[in-house]
Amino acid sequence: MRKALRKYLFVAAICLCTALTMAPVHAKAAGKVKNPAIVRLKPGKTYTKYDITGDKKKDKIKITLGKRDESDFIKRITVSVNGKKIVKKGIGSFYYKTSLVTLKNGKVYLWVKSSSEDADDTWGCLYQYRKGKLEKKLKFDGYVKKYYYHLSTDVVKVSGNTLTVKQSNMTSPLGEAVYKYDYKYENGKFHIVSRTAAIVKASYSYRTKSSWGTLKNNKMLYTSPSTSKSTGVAVTAGTKAKSTNIYMCDKFISVKIKTADGKTGWLKCSKKFDESKLLFKECFYAG
Image (cartoon, rainbow, N blue to C red):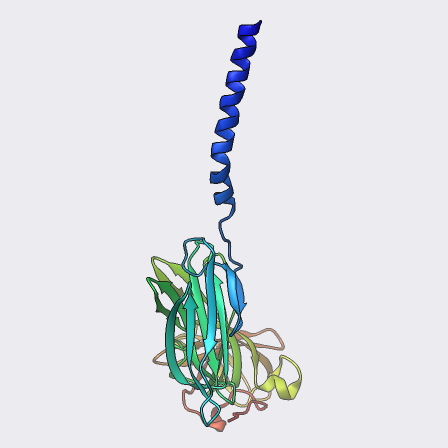
């Protein structure tokens, strides 16, 4: 009986020692940092509960803005990570916005946006912190830079390894347009999911107070944004319609519409800023 009791106590002691030995390992695993998909980092504040290096450990992060010059512009931003400072210089801006963006795969990025006095982007880039440097990974004006002015960009959503970006700019066929692109991370970099962007709002909405406008000219509908094949359906000036998508590339720009009676198709658009070429009577240019 005593021999059995000693054996039981010995086994219990071994189990207790094993449990005590394993406890710190479990605590460390449970302490790994999991960033929110998007979290705003305000200038001047020190953050200690987020991971920017991608190692799932807490980092000390602080964003500091440079002094304003005689024109009230801020021309540089300093990102401090665990005491190491990285200075980035850009065009003078009135306003800065910085956010940590984390994908499902664990990749972490710093989004930097700055705006001028008319709210236009002067700086819009996604960076990745690597070996004490901020490497440029994605600029958000790449697909629209030939067809716009007054561009403003916001990263509005992270779903898995995909970013949804909302942009607003003055376009040649619609005046101001607000639309969304998706960028997916795969094979080591970001790729735009489609150059067909979903339109959220266009300038005619400000005057009609609705999603519908009035077509300015007679138009032919096409089956795709390349406008190479007609649907055989024409829409006339005065038709009530709304813009649903926009496509911009080096060679052309086109807009997809839906009429009030249910017809859909793409319209050829001019890349030239000319009020006579605006698609809707209520559209207008600003700035």
